[in-house]
Length: 603
Ligand SMILES: [Zn+2]
Image (cartoon, rainbow, N blue to C red; front, side):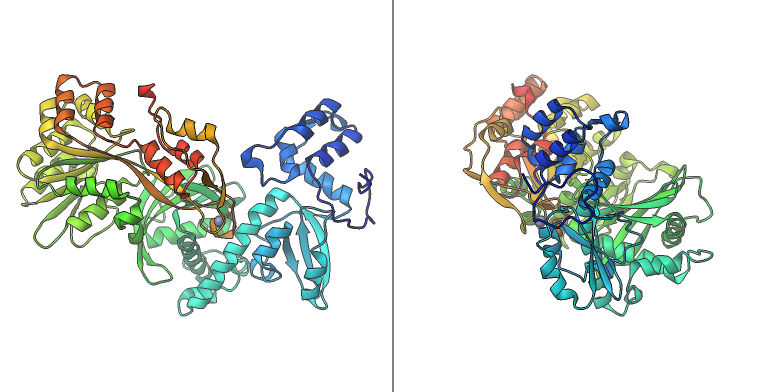
């Protein structure tokens, strides 16, 4: 290829509109004597994994952690390769520091779509110049388009670490949209947040006080940003020099921002005041709650907890959005069949219904949504919870109080004197609570509760293990529903592809299920933070305790026998419910395999 730049300096090299690829990188490294011929042969011909499709060639090469022969075997990592490519291309290297970049200015230079398409990002804007970072230094076909919009200003091109580019491109455009959104809302204290960095700068001056108006504005902004990103948790983590801010979105943590350590400390102090925690106490973990409003004015509750760490207090805020906690069965992802079975079970006037799954599988949302539907003026709905996740005026809610010895079992005993019709017990994890639930069911109440088990059939064996006799299980338990939350594909960027037959068969094993011709794959865009997924939906496995199942439970309480009978009854396992969603193009085979348990008991 005669387009190649010679090794070493090439400062005056003219752009030639060539995309470098893995083969090019490996050949340059080979010719410079940094890697042996074998490495070149293997790596330049190895096809990429599916997950690496969107990667920059430097990322692919860095993944192999090759030893650099010219530098005494030091690893050819992303930092070194970025510097190396910058030098080869004659472009200055630019280190993207999110704290120094004026996000609201750089994002006005070009649209996200343009930046993404060309692998570029504006990083500095001044009165007479605009600096744009790129990750394909030999392709500059975008320059003329961009220059036309810059008028008199000079265009400076720099090279930046491609990994940083991909990440910050999404963060910056999201951030600027959030700031613009806050500005549009007007009125509130957020209206004076015009530039987050400016705010940090102001906040960083002199003594920082939790009541300082800049700190107040930063806290407001963090909360609003988290709401706009549909985060379920905000993590504020002090490190030695900086504070990391991370959001959990659709079950996955994202690094969102870094705050200077002093500002992080002031932000945590401010949040402790808002959550009515003891601000002076920094050595013990504490927890509290705070209520605020989102930009639409809806009330949102946050549960705060602090933990002392080596570099200061770490704070995690869990966001309880009532819109998320109570949803329609359709929004929950119930199929028509799931819904019918669930309705039939919850229409009973007495008995126990379990929702089961690990922490974070959406059990509470299912219970709240169900109770909300069942709660009419004719019935008395009581709950005992630890903690109360959402205050619902139509329920009578009671909180477990460990400090005064009111556990789940005592709570149920107290509730039974309150003439309830329906009782929700947050969780059953001991025999005492299980016995109270059984007693409540036998005396004519409908009990809803949760268990921590992998699937529906193992809830039966769990109750037996706790010490509940089989005859009491069969006479009280109406049914069990196991659930998981799976990420759904982003509707803005998902792409149809032919189904991979091997993967499909692996997914539905040991069952047989018709393979859809096409499924969808994740791509990644601004709307989904480049993940390809947006939002989550439930998959369910419903198991009504029928007469044939009861006789199996009486005969032997072996999990395999119970599972086989459940399947004979028509129970659809979690994986199969997930596979149905894959076939509808809502999610992917990988996601369902990641989240749902395999039926290995039947192999
Ligand atoms: Zn997307």
